[in-house]
Length: 202
Length: 198
Image (cartoon, rainbow over all chains, first blue to last red; front, side, top):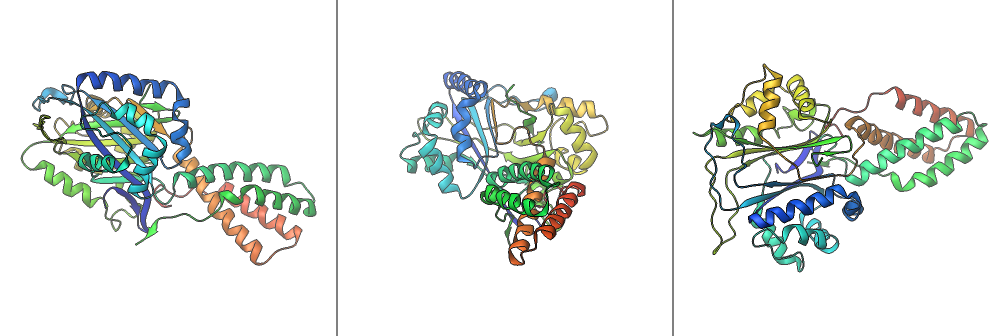
């Protein structure tokens, strides 16, 4: 399972997902503009962030005559198509990940992948899953600095640290009875940010 | 700039692999990096403290969509390396990897044009030659460093344990305040967990 980060305690929650799809020259031009728009106007990424299972995603367009030739030592590629590399890391199982994309992000998905040859549209999701399986490439090694933590775990940890530090600074000088009241208030405020996390034991 | 999102840089590189069996050898090497007996924190990249996530993929063919589309055949195999790290340039990654990860030579020696690690400038130039522009980089926490995230996760774990203890054996208000203060001070003084540990 080289597509999943891990450590000595077990398999991580982060799974890498690599899809390479061919595009015509016109498609490349359109996709370049669309991705630029998504990059320039960050509010377009809000829906993807709300799904809360994507720590990192790279979209990369590689033109047919732009496969790297450091020093010119390897032969130039002679290809019929340009290629879109979609390199994602997600949490959770593969099937529901694709279904969530198809359900919630079908508009941006269709806008970008419409220009990939053979793309069947995001809905219905069955043909989309077949298309992805055909074009998916497995990672040979992957790594995460926090393999046992999902996107939600990371968000909770960062928010919790802020709240606890603020509480400690504001409540440290209170008399014990008032401190206890404020501590209970803190518990109510952070209860949804607690919970265990970690790698899946072998 | 699409390679950058907040304080994070998303590097995507395609490195042509040497002919005559290097692709198979490189694949064997990469798969061996999953051995947690040799790398208890999951990868040699765990020694590079600025790296959040990374992957190595050997691309030895391109997908074929069936007739009437044309089949594209690659003349070279490629090592795809995608890495998300704290920083603003490839130089930062190169310096960190060369300093902390001796496996750089073992991996990239299989690639065409690899100049070795003696000159960081030449190595950075090589990585830039093989770099692909990331058209769109989506990052969930653009400003949080590896240390910030590990510390946040440490806080979450320690507070959870503290609350469990307090609920099992409820202390009086003075003891609660004292114990919480001790726990919080130890969190301030403790180093965050190492990358790959959690």
